[in-house]
Amino acid sequence: MLTDKLAIITGVSSGIGKALLLTLQKEGCIIHGIVKSEERKQSLAAELATLLSADDLSRITLHVCDLRKPAAIEDFAQTMHKMHLSPDILILNAGVGFYGPHEELSVKAITELTAVNFTAPLLLTNMFLRDLKANQGHLLFISSVTAAKNNNTHGCAYGATKAGISNFAKSLFEEVRKYDVRVTVLAPDMTKTDLYRNASFCASEDTDAALTPEEVANYALFALTARKGLNLTELTMQPQRHRLERIKKN
Ligand SMILES: NC(=O)c1ccc[n+]([C@@H]2O[C@H](COP(=O)([O-])OP(=O)(O)OC[C@H]3O[C@@H](n4cnc5c(N)ncnc54)[C@H](OP(=O)(O)O)[C@@H]3O)[C@@H](O)[C@H]2O)c1
Image (cartoon, rainbow, N blue to C red):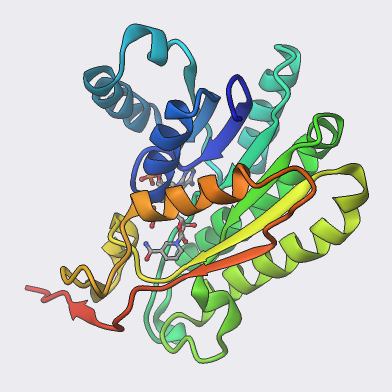
């Protein structure tokens, strides 16, 4: 069903993004994945070379694009358009997490949160929406359960970026549904990834208390392969238990 569909995925170097890349690759998609730096591109390319055949690798292109920088996003879009590469699927997955009492967050952290989690998906959507309309494509936003909460203590700014993106995506669906463009918001809860590298907590080792990136990617696939005419607008995924682990600082 997704064979030869061109998918742009942001944040493919780790976690949910890497699982999305591998899942859609198996489905036969042609993938253009965004990574933040040349170093991340090299390490991911080396890892993929151990997992995939040369044939499979030839259908994956990694682009360096620092999503904190609007000019880099414009360059990426121009490169794709110059090469007449028009996405059928756009997955806005890249994100960062900074947590703590709000007054303790640095200016850099707050700026990065809003740039990567909120501004970059809006810009990419703006730059590729004509393609998605022409292709009757699908936009998929990786938001978060925090989007629907108003008690994100020590994660107010993170939760606000996710609430913004969920709200944007749902209004966008109303704007583009008549063009047969589908828009899905996926809202996972605690998932076992590196997102919490800047936090004093992380997902529990208990499999009942954390999702895996592969589970999130499979749910994304479920939405992307729904029959034409059916839009899965918002999907929430939660582990059975609510349990965090504290990271001990030395
Ligand atoms: N893990 C969870 O519990 C959870 C729950 C709900 C929602 N989410 C959402 O899921 C999405 C994926 O996160 P994850 O959990 O898979 O964490 P992750 O492993 O840290 O992945 C985040 C990805 O975003 C990329 N990224 C960050 N800043 C970037 C930038 N400036 N330019 C380009 N790429 C950038 C990262 O690249 P680098 O590694 O090179 O920085 C990485 O590939 C995020 O939007 C996150 O908010 C996660």
